[in-house]
Structure formats: structure tokens, C-alpha cells
Amino acid sequence: MLFPALVRVSAVCCALPERAGRLVAGAAGLLAAQAWRGERTRLRETIDRVYHRRGRRPPQPVEAIIEQCFLHFALVIAELLRFPAMAADDFRARVSFEGLEHLQAALAAGRGVVLAVPHLGNWELLGGAIAHSGFPLHSFYMSQKEDDFGRALDHFRQFTKIVLHDRDRGLVGALKALKKGGILGMLPDQDGGNYGVYLDFLGHWVSMPAGPANWSLKTGAAVVPLFSLRCGHTGRYRARFLPALPAEAAGTMEERVIARTRRLVGWMEEVILAAPHQYLWFYDRFKPRHHGHLARLKQAGVPMRHGGACLGNLPGEAGE
Image (tube, rainbow, N blue to C red; front, side, top):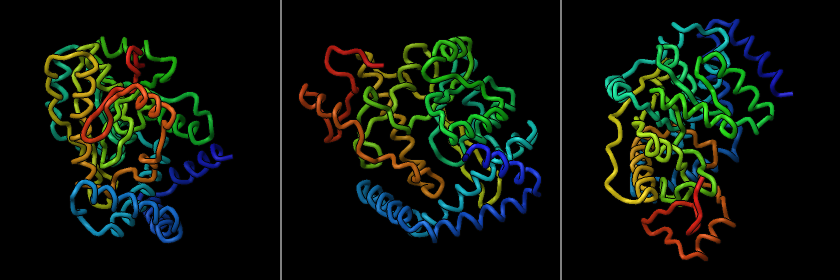
């Protein structure tokens, strides 16, 4: 069973000196980069295609990006496994914040903050550092994923001090926290499902979550973009809060949701393309999905691609 095995490995990681654990994890990551040839090929094709479609030159050779990506996420896993041994001071010491005034200004408005955090750097450690710094951070988890990996993630997240809400049954609790001026962390680069915002992300037509835009527009909460990057090969990160997204121009709710999601996508693309070795390419974000729903959208005459965007609900149908 994966979950008990991960708990046992975590106990070993917590008992080892941190430096020794990092050396073991780094060696394992570099070994995986050489041994896992199929995944290496997929990553090469994906990263090449993204930069080609964006008309950009990668910041370093693609093979180097892939190797660094394996190394980075091996260290991320080792950091996650050490969570049970980490106190509040440990979380805080591993992340330095830049632009914290942007978060504080958004919180001062009293209407809550949607914190938009892509899968870059170490978002789990970042959340723990924010929560252990005294900020009222809430987030979602997916209870339907009751496999061992999901159980393990929930087990390690309990040490971060983030207040977790079931994504299916905990919406009311998360909404109340936001309306009380709290912070709701959301991952705006994951799959948005049938009712997401369909648009171009890193050169691929995909569904992006409508949640960050929907929640902020309906509650008046500010959307504050945030990302973290590892400092060299150390266990420390530099996190940067950006100014809250500006208000959307007048329009229908659907138009404003699409416009706000576009802003998030534009920002995420820039930080991902600048630091590709720390982005979660291992999740096949561009795998074709939602075939049936896309066919229904096309049959309904919803304009798609060619620089356009659309909300996934069919005409006359309310989205989620």
C-alpha cells in the first residue's frame, strides 16, 4: 500500500539530517531523469511545442530544463515528506516574501482575497509558510480522490495549518471564510472541467478553472497572484505577491469571468516560461479532454479558438 509506505519513508526523512535527505533526494531525481525515458520524451515534446507555439526561445536547452525539473520535484517530494518534523518557524524560514504589501492592501479592503497560485516552485510549502505566518489561509481538497496518494497529500497537508474545505461539500464554509475577510488559495492552472473557461494556455486550447474569477467577482474579493521559486538548489524559496488584478470593464458576468481568467492566464504564462524547470510538466495538462462537451459547444455555435475564449456552459445553461 502506497500510503503506509509513504508514511514510513516520511519517518525516515524526518530522522535524517536535512542535508543528507536532500542529497539522497537529489540523486534519486537525477537517476529518474536518466531512467524514465518515456516521460523524458513526453516532457521534451511538450516543452518544445509550448515554446515553438509561443514563438519564444527557452531560457536554457530543453534537455537541461528536463533534468532540472526532475531534480527540483525530487526535492519538492523530500520537502513534503519532512512536513511532520517542521515547526512554524521552519515553514517561515524556508520562504521569503516579496510584495507582501500587495496582500496586506487587499486584505485591508475587508472583502477577502483569492490567492491565485500556479503549480510552480513548491506551492504546498508556500501555503504552509503563509498560514504559519498568521494569515487566515483556506483552500480546497478533493475528497473523491480516496486513493493512497490523495490520502498521503491530505496527511502531510495537515501540518501546514491551512484550513481545508472539501471541494464538493465544503463550498459554504470556504465562502463564509472569504466573506469574513479570509484568504482562499486556488490553483488557476489546473483543468477547469466542462464548465471552465476554454481558451489558449501555453499554445494549447484547454479548459481553465472559472473558480478564481467567479468567486472574486461574486463576492468582491481581490485576486492576488502569487508564485514561489526555489533559490538555486537549496531548500529555500523566494515568493512574490503581485498587485491585485484590476476591476474588469463593464460587461455581462460571463464576459467578466472570461476577461479575468485571461488576465490570470497571461500572468501565469510569463512566469512559467521564465522558469520552466520549476513547473509541474509531469501532470499532462494538455492531454485532450472534454471531447463530448466540446462537440456540443461547437454544435451550439459557440465561437472557439483563433484567439477567442468561451465559458463552457451551453447557451441558456448556467455554469457551475
